Amino acid sequence: MKIYVVSGLGADFKVLERLEFPENCELIFIDWLIPEKNEPFHSYVERMAEKVDVSEPFCLLGYSFGGIMVQEINQLKPAQKVVIMGSIRSDKEKSKLIRTGEITKIPRMFPTGMFNDKAANVYSVVRKLFDPKNPKILQYFQVRDPYYLKWSVEKVSEWKFEETPGVIQILGDKDIVFPIKYSKPDYVIKGGTHLFPATKYKEVSKILKEVFI
Image (cartoon, rainbow, N blue to C red):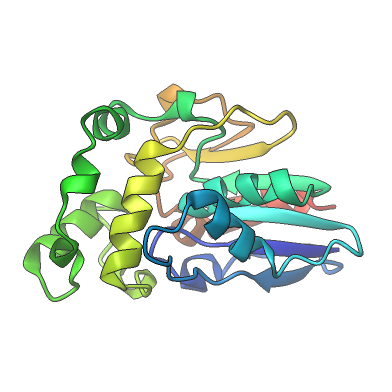
């Protein structure tokens, strides 16, 4: 069984590298693309979905913003199973902070230069966004194109989506990006922050082996 995987906002696959899957699973990673200027979100999703081969059964797995992306891809190319980690199933699960950004449109006002990885404020933004207690946080944050980062923050804030039945959700109970109190996940990782796929990989691997059996 092929599993197409999309990682988190600005993250490469290091954050997921310790996860274990059933032996019959073949992982295919879909790298983040740099958005074209003024590219509609649906057009971007279509480009991300190009790598998915529908000639044989497949599953989708997404982490954080990647969880949002795989649900969008599933609308174009339906999968046998869709699993999201550290992500939300609809815009109704957004936190108050993200909703504030949606209402005020503040993310659109951020200058692109704010997302320059040499700027000191980016470091503090990244730490708060992922996991303030994890000293290795920046090793996961590899996609640093300023336009992509600003665009991604805007899209998370603006995202509108009706929950799709059957999507399997795994959340950490200490996640500050997508707080568990706004969702009803299928699986809860005790003590899991937003980086739980890296810090609680044994617990997550056990779940994934059950889900993708």
